[in-house]
Length: 108
Image (cartoon, rainbow, N blue to C red; front, side):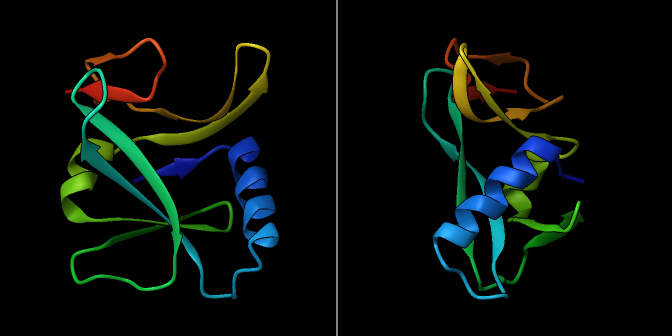
């Protein structure tokens, strides 16, 4: 399962409202090759499910990822920080064995 913190939920809802998305939107989370540690996170709003998508709902937010990405993301929580040490979304991923200094990429 993939979960979302209250802060991340509020920020996602704000961004969805600003983007004027229709009621069928969801947050697509995926893992792509790249970054300092080898793998990077990617997030987008989407409205079309794909064949092997894994679908979760937490705090009223629909979170979707492809099956390959789910192997890396199982148990991950999406969080949001607006503090002085960095503003933005970040992933609390129990599968990551190391992360880069900026937190944008990871390795397993």
